[in-house]
Length: 249
Image 1 (cartoon, rainbow, N blue to C red):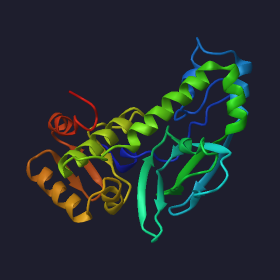
Image 2 (spheres, helix red, strand yellow; image 1 turned 120 degrees about the vertical axis):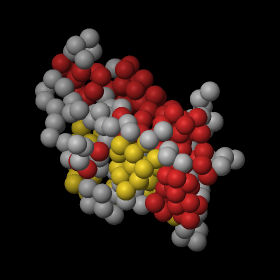
Image 3 (cartoon, rainbow, N blue to C red; image 1 turned 180 degrees about the vertical axis):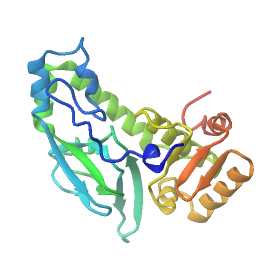
């Protein structure tokens, strides 16, 4: 029987060691036997600073702050957002363990948004100037950064465009399922730790619309939902609904 802790990443006990990174590290593949030697690995280890815990609502960085680090989520959920000139919030993204926050600040060297903890968050802080220097010597670091920047851009456009509410929500659920599954969590049963209003904001939908679509998907047997716990009962149909947004045929 899966429990809540099995469905959502809680603070990790695996901090890695002198030969490998912790299990959520985005640079973990460099630790493979056919990777780099221990000295190169040690250089990357030296860039990492464990920070946290951050409690729900705690700020990690804010709009306009000088950019000097990127953050890898070790546990919990981070939300990024901006405020318009009337103080209205626009949610830009959610970041789970194994994902980098702050990549969109590389240019113009200032954070273009706010980042806050949604629940209890643990992070790894990477000094970006030092990492950029090391990346010039270790091509795999540069390749990993480019791949993650590309992925970050793709995720940021999720739900943007002329799509129906059903397509947007289906894409969100499928994308969330795949992101957690890649970290070893269940692809069919998982927790949505963010507020439903934040999901609606992120998808550019009214909260009432999201609630209506959830009820319809539940009635049609596509999903089952209990508070924040979701089960994908018909993932194939959800993937077909989401195919246009997720660039699938």
